[in-house]
Amino acid sequence: MSASHYPGSEAFKGIPTACISDALDTFGINGGLEGLKALGPGMALAGPAYTLQYEPVPEGEAAQAGEFIDEVPEGHVVVIANGGRQYCTVWGDLLTYAAKIRGLRGTVIDGCCRDATAILQTGYPLFSLGSYMKSGKNRVRLAARQVPVTIGSTVVCPGDIVAADDSGVIVIPKDVAEQAYRRVKEIEAMEERILLDLQNGMPMKEARIKHRYNQYALRVNV
Image (cartoon, rainbow, N blue to C red; front, side):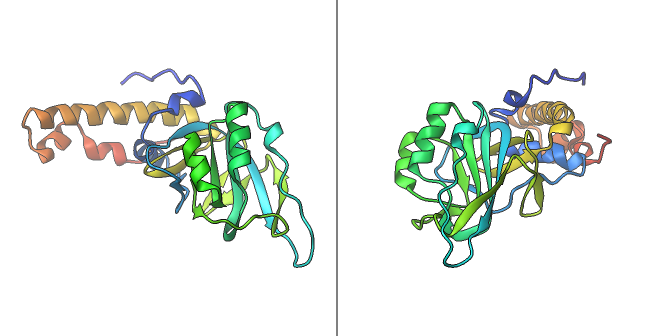
């Protein structure tokens, strides 16, 4: 198949994360952010990462809420590395309102949010380990912004493409985004051909063989 033109991070909007994962697998790249789920069904996002690193605050030391939202460029996805902490939150309704006003595409948290009901009412895409009511003030603090952060076993760098849907969250390294997009389009086209044959009565095994389903799982050079 001829290479598809890659129009930027917007290209991954609406593409299932499962398909993106299959494409990254062929390059030997994980990309998945384990355990992170949509706050509500049907949420989805795609866009470049704006990364934030949080750290715990020593007991008895004061620390204000992280001030960053006014610096996040329009069209970006906020990625918060809070070390998987679930005893306090780093995102709530006020940040959600500000993010929507600024035209951000969503937020991904290795940790928890709060004000879940209010966030759901806005329809703003948010993915996290869960929700909890405890504030992060005086418990955690913003340590760095726009630096590489680690979530689970995956490193997320500023500008990497983040995509998320009901199946979870995945990160496409920016230096392979174009190649990954081309591979995604090849896999999508192959699966569409299989689906058409299934609808026409062909057995699954025969359809997979016909369209070289397992060949698309083989490693390729980036």
